[in-house]
Amino acid sequence: MYRLDFLEQLKLRLVPPPRAGRVRDVSSVVWHLGFISLLTDVSAEMVNSALPGYLVLYLHLSPLEYGAIDGVYNGLAVALLSLAAGFAADRSGRPKRIALAGYGLSTLCKPLLLVAGAAWGWILAVVWIDRTGKSIRTAPRDAILSLNASPSLMATAFALHRGLDAFGSLLGPLITFLVLFHLPTGYKLVWIVSFGFALHGIVVLMFRIPADVPRSAGEAPRATWRELWRGCADRRLVALAAAALLLSAMTISDGFVYLLLQKQGGPGAVYFPLFYVGTACAYVLLSLPAGRIADRIGRLPVLVGGYAALGLLYLLLLRSSTVGLGTVAAALALLGLYYAATEGVLTAMTSVVLPTFNRATGIALVGTMAGVGKLLASLAFGWMWERQGTAAAVGAFGAGLAAALLASVLLVRASRTGASA
Image 1: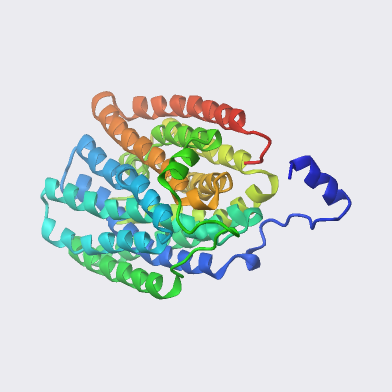
Image 2 (image 1 turned 45 degrees about the horizontal axis):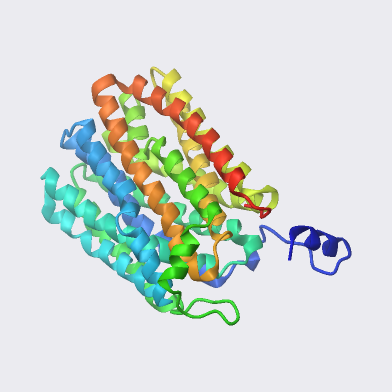
């Protein structure tokens, strides 16, 4: 059915009007996936929020060394095996199994941090394996979510999931802060508690998420390799993947943003995890409204608004020679707004242009491009900070973000063939 036909039938009331943003209509599977991500993110963010202070302020690693670990943690995490995991999930028709393998691998790696000690190479190896688990689970999980959400509620469903995920991102750093506040060198205790939360997430996944996913009538339970490759060549998917690469390559990671705030006179190392708490608070509050707005007015404008908020954060970092409480609050609010308006929205934009049989693969492709961009961004920003200073690094990334955003909008709009993103 063409879009104009639909509009004419809508005027004649032959079809019901689309409804967007009704949280009560979201599938219970989406809620369960959200709680799994909440528990897993408590675990992951306990580690993530402790690492910058532990590596740079406690072990005194250089910005470039931290950039390598941060790139592995936030970028290579998705780039390593995400596309292969997406293929496997679509080819087998059992995305839950692939997701469970990824969650399990990340969980098992938490205790390895206990024996890594202060060895930079071992920490890098453990983080590499841990984030490989994330790269395996992300696309199959998002495919399960999108296949259990109606197209008119796609951004809302992802926003709900990301909101619960962000609540875990809030609790994780808060728990880390409480541990380190009472025991400033208690990083081993942080790793142990992190392992416990990750283990609970696996239990929920095993018993609350169905093994099968809903498919269209008459659709084969397994896709052929030719179908999967053909689906990846869709011009709308290619444009979204290119946009994900461009934009993520110009995105300064959270850890570097927080290190900049701390370097410019922010709170001491003990309070470092609270930066993550502040960002997560803003993310939790803004995620669902951003998703509902995206379903109603269009997802591309909301995505652009999110990256505009990131650009304002760069300006704030450039203009603030010293950091007070107000500057810190504004920076964390802008970072939370950026995440709320981009993460779930981009995945929703990807999901609605993909057929059921190719859902995990397409999501993985876009995620892989974003992961490669984040890896490059962390390495480049760490190198520029070390060689040219923070002001030059932030300024270069700000200019690059503006160019990347313009190019991405043009790419996505040019790729449309009458269907709404």
